[in-house]
Length: 259
Image (cartoon, one colour):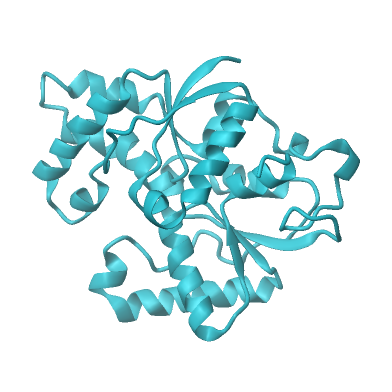
């Protein structure tokens, strides 16, 4: 395919879940992409934007454009950062003659990982397990009975993919015992700074989300947003609930023997 793709790792993934970035790179290379990692990349400006510091967010956005606009596509393992680049950055820079059009053009070439795989590369998740082992893969990549899994749909994915589109990436992956999540569109309570500013409300929302996950009987949660994964995983740990949380890139990379 020989498509040039830049990995935008995002702040939380880089700091807390670097293995997700490794899985994304290995998968994109497996699918025939030339993957680049511009080391000058920093934050896209989302935390500043969410807290009302729009001028500072715009400054970070300009830098982000300078770093990434030379690539054909930009792929990130996070819907929230992609939503920032796609929907909010062009708005912030619409009156900047040097960056307005550049922000719109780059926004159109910036993708959340699963969206890029299915919409741009046209990869069917049903093909991501070798034929010899299809239907008998556990969630840790080892042979065994299908693992019960469920999926958390993060709030920021709403501007990128419908619930059905996002959920299908997991549902269609062979060898899994998929368990639909009750109230799948409900927030996990993270909300960026929300969980810090309103800890009691955030904790109550997270508790409700964890109860929904537990009711599925799933031992693995597929969660493609590191902030959500940290929030849900933190409460599960404090409650003593055994729950494995994986990004779908990790799951797919294991299925294809790339990890």
